[in-house]
Length: 300
Image (tube, rainbow, N blue to C red; front, side, top):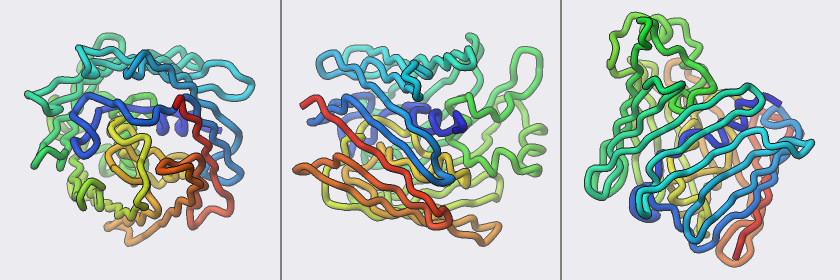
């Protein structure tokens, strides 16, 4: 299976919206220790495991393993007090290493800076309204040799852009002609209480939307970050992820629309619960004949 799935399920952690807890703090009541996910359709083929390591109330690492059980990807989290300060990501299959640092303005997340080989590659800037993130601006920077940072599925911030926008000729040309530090694309976020009801991507007029509905149970990923903002991605390896890290509740359905192409896609999520928390989820993409299943284990 493509490694884009793994990066999609464990890419950039840009922390939490205040609907779960304060920015930079992920301390859920029930803490995940293990996730197993497997699939039989286009959305996933094969089986993966995630092992989560905690020290007290802090998540210190997540190891992603593909069968046979070798550590394939590793995320290590560093803190400043209770707040997440940085994430180091290692891809052992491709000998890839990168780091994301976080900056706060008072109690709110202000900026995330992404580095490869010690070189700043891209930046995400956050707008907060009434304690919730309502907009994210993504800025890509020139490398020292003058070349533009390319769209690359290894890059945490690049993974937040829908894949078809990454590959669109007009978008690539726009990016190639842009100047260092120029805004590349913007995400706007609409809330309904403590859940995101709608997201809109705008890449110089290339517009995509995604609308969501939810259950009334507790979401164990709430507060983990905007790691999985790529719900709008047309790539099946990314579309059906269950990791919705802004929302208080668990997603039941999402509807995707490409405004320029006038196309739609829908995804449904069916859960098994123990008390207020899910223990498993089956994801079905409307245009995919197969399904993807997730099973969760908790420390407590």
